[in-house]
Image (cartoon, rainbow, N blue to C red):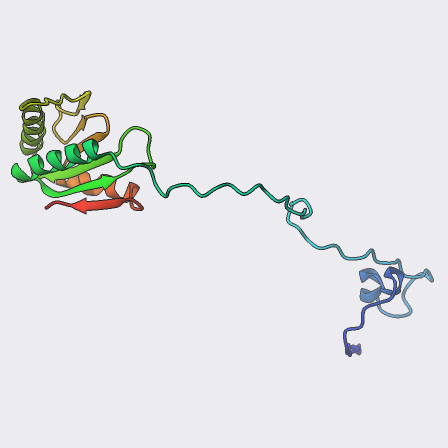
Amino acid sequence: MATKKKTGTRKPKSPRATPSRAAKKSPAGKGKGKAPAAKAPARKKTAGRAPARKKAKLPVVPQQKAGPEENPQAKALAHRIGQLLVDKKGEDVVILDVRGKTSYADYIVVTSAETDRQVLAMAENVQVELKKGDAPVRALSTEGTESGGWVLLDYGEVVAHVFRTELRAHYDFEGLWADTAREKLS
């Protein structure tokens, strides 16, 4: 069986000029005397998408300030909590700036400790010290003081997480907020 080599890539003038696949595959002289069926023009595959439409021009919106406003009271509270944790030998104390990224807080303070007892002592120290002074601050909520592996202190705009070291590595809390600004205190 001899094969014919294609020379050049010339497009047919009409869809009927292209022989069908069946006519190409069948050997010459074995057809039933019928003319080969015409092949429909090839369509561009769109993988289930609708045909592209022209995009409408949107009105120009004036540029807004980049990022949410600074909250100096929340920032000061976050630094105060961070310093209290450093004073009680908190390891790897980090303040995450989550303004504009979450609705429940502006800053998250994260630290870790070696034992459950140290985690509880650090959390209790923060609560006691923040209640002292001219402007006492009380936690809105406290979670995890029964177990001691992970204690959460909620002060409204500032949330503090005190982890046992292996739990902090397991949950990779900072990985959740990888795109936020952070300040390392210890």
